[in-house]
Image (cartoon, rainbow, N blue to C red):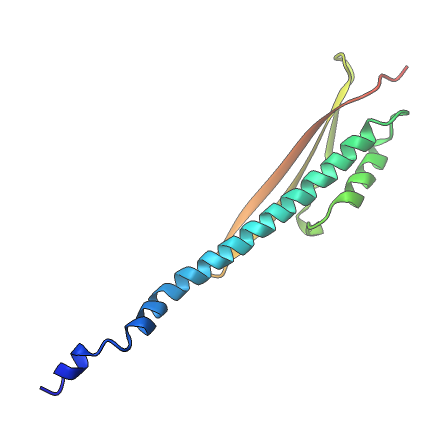
Length: 132
């Protein structure tokens, strides 16, 4: 008889529902923040490759070291430990002459209980002036 009034009381249901849903909500918010970091890193990687590609199209043709320094100067939002050196591949046998610039960035998505590695890669093809 003394338990019957306690069973009919609905006063703590909101607190119990919140306690059950709070971890899911927190993981959802952390996921949104991690997705924002991925977009920021991708924008920094894209900006660096685009800047290197613009510099590679200049005449007279810049050296690889100049292109690499331009790429390094233009990147933002990237941890230097995760940045792979840009690869420049020239093809001067085909017409028109072109170069492929490729760069990758490895980052770790940190969900409190789980860490997932992620590699972002950008490639840009640049058409070059012939060396005559």
